[in-house]
Image 1 (spheres, rainbow, N blue to C red):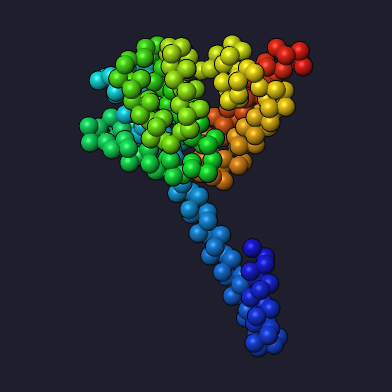
Image 2: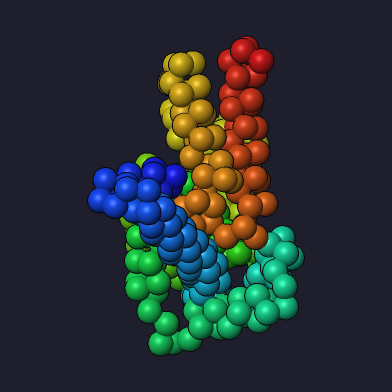
Length: 253
């Protein structure tokens, strides 16, 4: 941003000497402030949209089987606590959840908003899915309609074939498999997105790539709300645990 101020000052100096330098530098500094304000507003808007879509899609998924169970409602309330939402934010989350439950809710349009936001950051998409899977598995049941809706969400987000296969494998494991990826070695490979035949170098490369993509600061710059930083930290811990489990299994611990 400093370069803009310097360019403005240089052009001003060339056109009007010392007075021009001061005017040009001032105009450059003003432009920098405007650009920063615009960037901050855009980021805040993206973060608000991400949170709104998270609870709206959650409401839609939980209602997929025709009813929202008390366990599913409790899962949404627990997420409010985890995200440390204030009263106003909780009221908005509740409104978004109810919006998702409405028969008029346009799921495809909501998913398209998230897809555009996460198009350059797959980790955002993964966090969004992780929250949805945890909520829908809260009651210990996975109704066929919920399973179908989850896969509609996965495809609506523009997930890769590997991501789709990963979610399908989790769903085959039942509600608890959907809620968390479990301690098995097979699951650890799924977390890193590599096969058991992958070389040590390939495993390490996948691990480093995921840790970089899921860094909370990087995700925040892409639209992850500050309140969801804790969820992002849980994701990096999951990746780290999976890598450690694979290394131990290979005798590299």
